Amino acid sequence: MRLYQVDSFTDQKFRGNPAGVCILTRDIPEETMQAIAMEMNLSETAFVRQDGLEHKLRWFTPTNEVDLCGHATLAAAHVMFREIGLKAMEIKFQTKSGMLVAKRSGDGIRLDFPIGNPQPAKLPEPIFDSLGISRDEIEAVLFCKAMNKFLVHLKDPGLVSRIEPNFGRMLEYKPEKLIGVIITAAGKNHDFISRFFAPWVGVNEDPVTGSSHTVLAPYWGKILGMTRMSAYQASKRGGEMTVELAEERVLLTGKAVTVFETEIGIE
Image 1: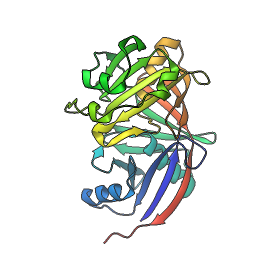
Image 2: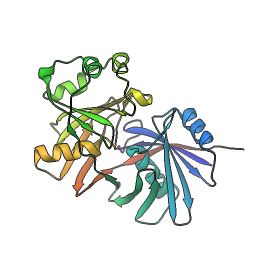
Image 3: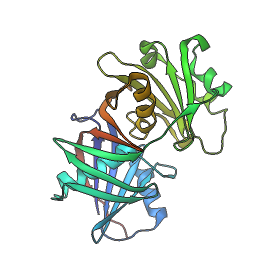
Image 4: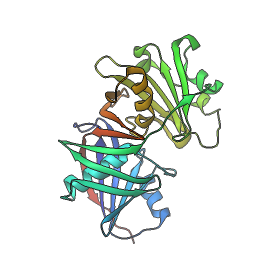
């Protein structure tokens, strides 16, 4: 089986968010997929299985399967278009989150994801403490039930890159299904900026997170009165994308670059 490492939401190697992409020529046990993801040791590894005209897609972190992953979906589409040589203009992926469509868009790829509408919420004390900020520095706190993510809007954009979370304290909050915490603020060169912390699923900080932008897009769309926005995730690797609101969907457009490919043998 072919195995690729792809940097998503960037056009430069060693930036953006790295994801593994494994192209399956046959069905393999779930335990084997999990073992491959653990061996890759990336935030997510995507597994693509072509079945007739359909493409089945699953995502695994080093510790567990997840229901949705934006950057690994972009990586999977990039591999199918650029490495495998699929000639179609779009790919329809069958996933645990329903049908996801990836479409060629100029020199990038556009992903069509379900929207994640966040609602006002109270930030749990361990998470607040872990961020090392005062309540006066917070503009708003929301929670998206569909994505199981908190969104924390900070007043000072400079604070987004300066925060160094205490992940031990953050993990003292032990909900059943929480995925992570988004921090965000208005941008200078982009419409908004963000970071994403997910120690509950074994990823302290995700470099660039497509699924978080399904929550950020409707939030910032209301504030800015815009349906199409530019976004930057201010991690050390950094990554950018364009987000667009389309009724109950969010369209994410970004680029990706292959770092390496190899062959993996499975008995």
